[in-house]
Image: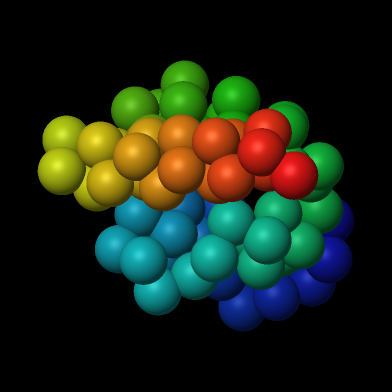
Length: 72
């Protein structure tokens, strides 16, 4: 594990608050991203934290992209 001034608990708190990205969190914890997702999930910290409106907006955006690409 890389030496840093934060404990794993501190890193997870910062990640949960949105002050630290998942990429930086994995770097500080010396984990692969998938390993971090599983680790955080076991502690009740969601990897994707979206409300229904955000999720629907992303789904609609993805659908428009698929439709646009299929007409090329």
